[in-house]
Image (cartoon, rainbow, N blue to C red; front, side):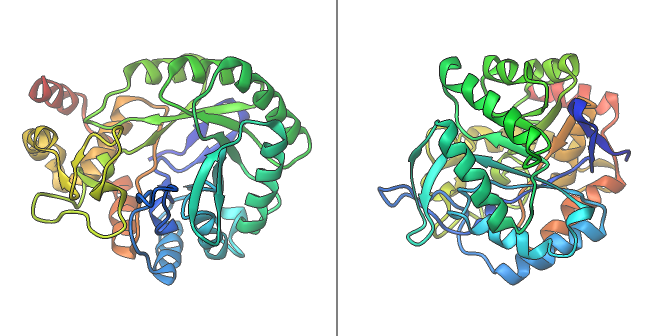
Length: 324
């Protein structure tokens, strides 16, 4: 597959990026409820990142709050000596304690933005970010000074572009008015079409960075016989995590949809996860899905989806009919 562009700023990335939430390991909110994906092996995470690069992946998306800073530190270690081979995205806005691994609250001040970007650069071991993203939704009055502050960071060479991680189209449009806005990160998968976002990204010349492209694992390795366990957010899912029930098992109504489209997604020799990525590539030329990973095996499976490319138009139509 050809490289895809991060919008109008001239940064090219592999058609699949790797989301680094899972490799951050456990962290929680003040009530002790899990916000991570459970225990991780940092050395395995590093091997997985380096294997992904060998297989053609150039885009890695993280956030300062993932693992309360730990994801950025692991990614930085893995990319040491390889910085010129990759595009790094991170996010800011949530305050946290690295020692206790607890996320506290949001800070929407431009002053905190500047503090946060320097902290991320230090953890990642780099002197610039390719993409920096606002990590919570808020009002126009709060967002506009942050957009202006991002333009200042671009002028200073600390970031190359910025975006908003949001599922509110109005918010995406507000940031898109900034000169160096290059993308919008939003939820999208074969189970959650995002037609309005896809259309807007094509119209505004932005990349559509797709979070939860595998439905938090329901389109990958999780099924009714293999629930999530331990300090995993899916064991006690918040309201927005629609694909899983308490206890880490797939929600029946969503599992039925996966079962209905499984055969089409696995056509031509793909795995279920590879088919889900192929659906997103076929859905829009702007999409850059960012599936999570924790092992070399998972990294290889996700990266090798590139060898198959997007689904065919008739396969998209068949899936649409099955889900309808």
